[in-house]
Length: 203
Image 1 (cartoon, helix red, strand yellow):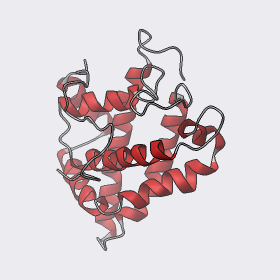
Image 2 (cartoon, rainbow, N blue to C red):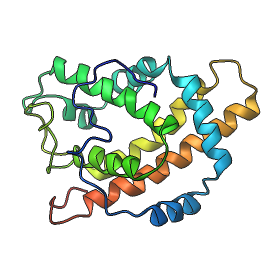
Image 3 (cartoon, rainbow, N blue to C red):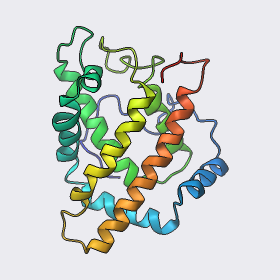
Image 4 (cartoon, one colour):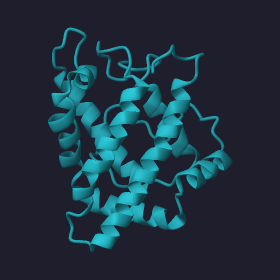
């Protein structure tokens, strides 16, 4: 399995402490059908993972440094509540962000994958934000901003998918598969935000 680094602080994919999702494999297949994801899309996701494997640092820097860093209501979620930088948190969370790109493309979409998608979402809600890294930042990231930023990730990933000289038709297929995956993931993330037993209204 491709890793963004040998050691990734706070990355716990497939580990026992990650709660098992109540989402069934049948529901996952239905979600795939809803977004139009086919087995061919999954093959193009694997190709995308190969293309992006040595570019994840640049992609995350693009998203967090060049885009999120210039949008105050987004960048504040990686800072203290007084607005100060948290360098160690940025290093750790950037590595996890890079690994998420690889997991999106290269992991099998099974129960472990579903459960970790929910764990990612949980770490953006008041149920678990700040706990993994032991920091004092904002209490949660609003769901509206997460869903909205999916459009930015989809748009900006395409040049990186085209960086290895693949024919335009293949780049388009990789990009289509990536976009379907992010739509699928957003649907799973939303389930965590809808759990009123764990979080308050955090739209």
